[in-house]
Length: 175
Length: 175
Image 1 (cartoon, rainbow over the protein chains, first blue to last red):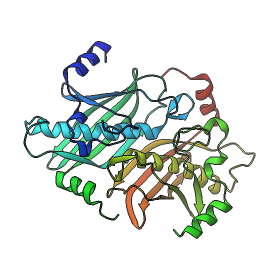
Image 2 (tube, chains in turn yellow, red; image 1 turned 135 degrees about the vertical axis):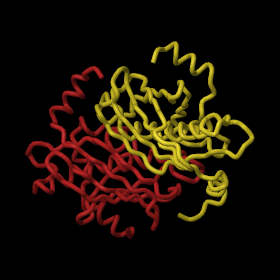
Image 3 (cartoon, one colour; image 1 turned 180 degrees about the vertical axis):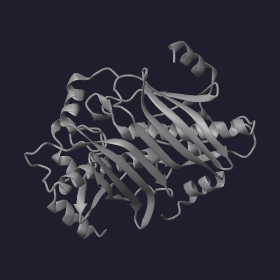
Image 4 (tube, rainbow over the protein chains, first blue to last red; image 1 turned 180 degrees about the horizontal axis):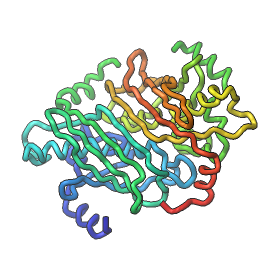
């Protein structure tokens, strides 16, 4: 994607994750309230979703290449964020309306590592919905560095009642 | 696993990752030479492999629960380490012998998140080989917190020539 188009997207949209309420904004991968985390932010690009991330020098598998766990994390967070955004769009709703909130948790994550992901360049994640059905949203994601697609991921996200999440945070049941 | 058994394992074995040569010891997930990383260490427990990890307070999805990206990372690193260990064992070799080194990269990673993983307890990863065939080793991993299995993972690891990895590190081809 061109730098201009990226700037246009960022300037004109509020990222999906910034619609999350405070009790959902602590995720290490994408929470705005996690001081240590990655702060991944996801946006619409037409009918697809997009996010960008530049790994730190120490996020490596071997010198010069990004470690797979980080790529899995980015795919996971872009996937659940995209799932929520697609669910709102499918319901013809805005993410900040007054209706019942649509929250998604990851049921499963799959990543195919196609080639070593170079360090030192910005990575782009591009998502599209493969399925939106009932409480389930499936997001397919391509992760690229420059022109090379380095990994492909699939996130199966399942809608959870907001009360379930609030109860988890507040009541902390035993494992 | 009992604390005694864990101590016995750690005291009697060198972890798989500590057999990796320096150029493979920088992984954020498990490299002994990565100052910022997780330093995951994997061991034999009979015919299975085991590793332990206690997440940091900020490694959360929502307050009180570990974020899925970290679990995926741990499963990935325990998977590739276990793949190497099983490959050496299948070849009736020691990991530090003088033969050609057996190195594994992740081809694919799959994680099913079964229940929220509580923060504040040590997590245990337990691996077993589902397949050892040619250059491919498939490792199934259960991740548990106390008695609860919180996630199940599958890592498809593929053996890479050591020269391929050395070339990547030294020559850094374009993406």
